Image 1: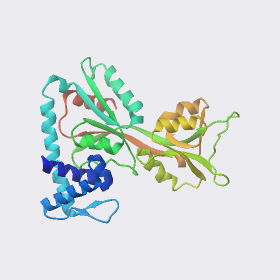
Image 2: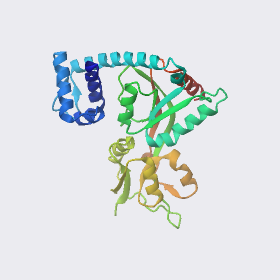
Image 3: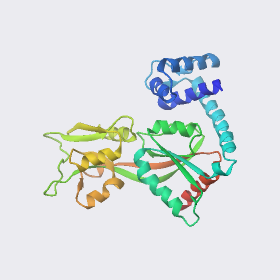
Image 4: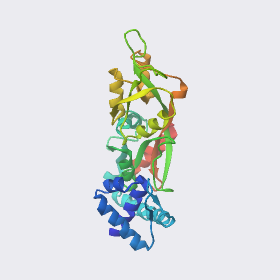
Length: 303
């Protein structure tokens, strides 16, 4: 299986565009990962990576091998999933990977609907395995056949990097990021968006979070004076910071609409400051376990 591990290394490198990040995903040191890619190049008899570029790009030969590697590993994953699901226990488990905030909100609601449907997709003996973390790590779990479905945000500034042709998706929801802040005792925004004068404190996100790239892309085009104050590793943490009056944050409307209606938070700016995005559900094109297929079909019918 050593050659397969090298193929998986190439897939991780293509997904992350970074030797350092790919090495972390593959749980090896940076030098060791570099040696493994060179070993794969020696095996292939051609350079696979264009060195000196950031992010890392594959050569034409590397892209060709990446496509073939995805097909080979995908086929093996199909066979492994079929073997594992031959028993009743495997057929009753739905494996989902997603981010922490999505797990608490939309994914939790989706699982509840599957449980409550008249057809009882998630019946008495069904189980759900829910894994959360940095989206790049969750993508790797799906690619390796360790998950049935991936729920993630989708925006032009942030698209999940899955092996082409192996997956299909549906849109579970549409939402928007809205700049919000706490309301003061007189019912006015505590931190209005200023074009001049003192900068408003900005609550933003760490680089590993999906929203970091989505919000960062838009902030570069806005005319407002904003001073980074707190960087959070989750939407929930940013929400708590805003509720405590510590600054302005772009948060999903589905998360803050109730606060705004109650007069606890205020939505700032106009529609020009809002950032629309989707929530997507991805799955392999190959057949999944019985409960996973039932969940997918029920979700498609219920949209």
